[in-house]
Length: 204
Image (cartoon, rainbow, N blue to C red):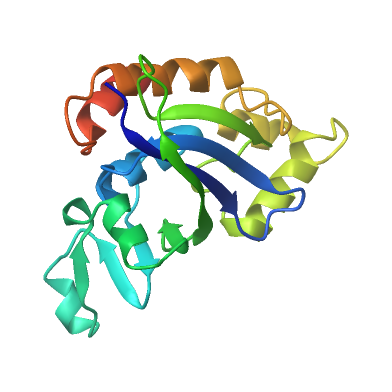
């Protein structure tokens, strides 16, 4: 039985060349599950807080500190992509790691019936490897790329040691992304909720 899906494009703001991904996701996807999906395709590790900014509202994981900062945070797990579209919203913001401040623009494209026999979400395409965790925001990422791409750079060995392996900015490891997203899709039952604990086991 097919389900209604949307083509979403994820762009990591201020990256040049642009880091981006495209996927087909069910309209039943919660924002909490969308967070999981973005973490996977951007190779983030879910170490930090996140939030979605949609039509003037903030969605994430509410905490007692929100009142101190005079913020109202709505539950990300309580809102589905289909509801966002019903409200007339086709683009919104996802922010991960409030220190490094990775801002992702999410744009919703074509909405259609999914193909029979295909399990969603499904990875479609992408370009450029996303920055490593805790690299220090856009400026830190640019400095990191400069160091790892130049064997003569004074920080070359130190950055490679910090990262733990070679870093190819062009290689998004598309085969791995397909496999992980397919596994994510195969394990879902009913509306797409968060699978964060399962994803961490898969990636560890």
